[in-house]
Image (cartoon, rainbow, N blue to C red; front, side):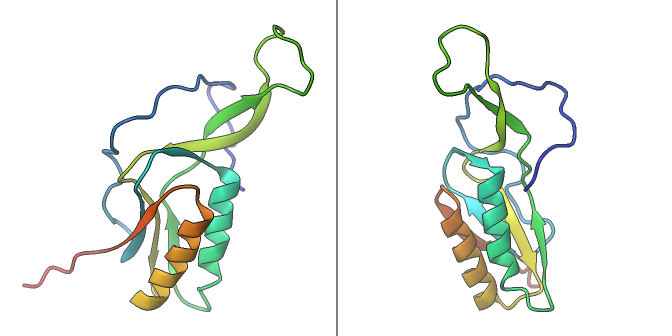
Length: 139
């Protein structure tokens, strides 16, 4: 699973996640990609499940880029802990995703196989996603 080696602050505040994404909205590395259509926190476990689903389609070719990294810590308090006593310990890490963000990019597969791989990966994520491909510029 993806975890940060070191964070500047151990515990973060939740914050708000509204609006559309302004960064990582276009394909830069691969020919095909998976774009988010909603707002949610994606955990490192969900990202790992989607990554493994994509890798099953790579027999001996293809390359994959993960365009997000879960570095936001989420804390939980234990069961039967009374009120007070401070914030709980870090439980897992998430990436707050907004509409328009590219999650995965792949290259080296035919379009039909890439579409199928990214569809299965999108089913592993708790968000609606869309298959996109790089625009070919005809001179």
